[in-house]
Image (cartoon, rainbow, N blue to C red; front, top):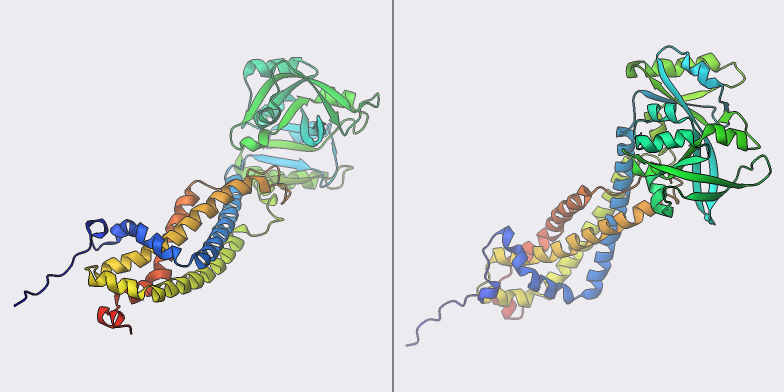
Length: 404
C-alpha cells in the first residue's frame, strides 16, 4: 500500500515568514508579475511619477513660503513709495520717528555682465547703516573697511561669486541700464570683498556698491533711493510705527507705503495664491484617481495569474504569503513612482523661479519630503492592493487547477 504523500514545501529561496516585514523577499516574484503587463504598469507608473512630482513641487513651494515667513524679522519695516523712488533726504525724517533705532536705504543699479542674459543687480548703500539693519548680511571686517574706503569698491554676494567666479582685487566692467554723467553705460568696479546671507543664501545674488559713488556718477535719479529699511527698538511697536510713518507722510510730496518684513515675504507669494490649499486639492484628486487606476491594474494582474497562485498554494505557499506577494507588487509601483517623482521635483523646482517671476525667492524641496512621500506611497499601496491581495489569498486550489 502506498504511503500518503507528505505536503510539498516551497523552495528555501521562497520560504518566508508570514509577516508584513517579509514582503521584500517576494520582490523577484513581484517584478515577474509586473512584467506580465508592462504597458499597463508603465502607464500607471507614469501617473504616479507625475502626481508625486506635482505634489513635491507644490509642497516645496509651500515650504519655501513658510521658510520665508519664519525668517521674517519682527523688528524690521520697509518703507517704499508704492511705485516710484524716494528722496534719500527722507532718511533723517525717518530716524526722528519715536521707536526707530536705525534706518538704511538701497538704490538699485540693474546691469548685465558679458552677455545680455547675464543680469546682475547692484545695490547702492551706506555700509554702516545697511549692515546694522540687515544683520543676516555678513562680511569680514577687513573687507568691509576696504569697501568703505574704496570709492569704486564693491562687495560681491556669495551666490553671485559662484555664478561669475569674481576674485578679490579683480576689476569688473558691467553694462548698466543707468547711464553715467558722460553718457556711458559701462560701469567699472573693484572687487574688495565678499558677503554672505546667513538666512537665505539665494538673496546674496547681488553686489553692494557705495551710494555716494553711484549717486555722483549717474545721470538720472540723483538723490533718489528705491526703499528704506527701518529697524525698530521694540518689535511690539512695529505696527504702530508702520501706521505712524504712512500717516505722517500721507499729505507730503513723497507719500509712503510701509510694510513689515513678514508682509513683504508673504506678498512675494500673493500672485501664486493659497499654495497649501492648491497642493492639498491637486494631490488629493490625483491620488484618488491613482488609487482607482492602480487597484484596477492589480485586480487584472491577479485574474491573469490565478493559475500561478493556485500552483504556489499547492506547493506550500500560505495565504498570508500570497497576500504579501501581491502587496509587494503594489508597493513597487507606488514607492518607485514616488521616489522618481520627488527626485524630479527637487531638480525642477529651483529652476521654476523664472516661470513664476520669483527669482529672488529660494525654492527647494525639503529633504524630509522624500520620506513622507514613501510613507504615503506605502499606505496607498496597501489600500490599492488590499482587495486584489485578499482575493488572491482566498483562491481555492482545487477549482483553479481543475480549470474553473
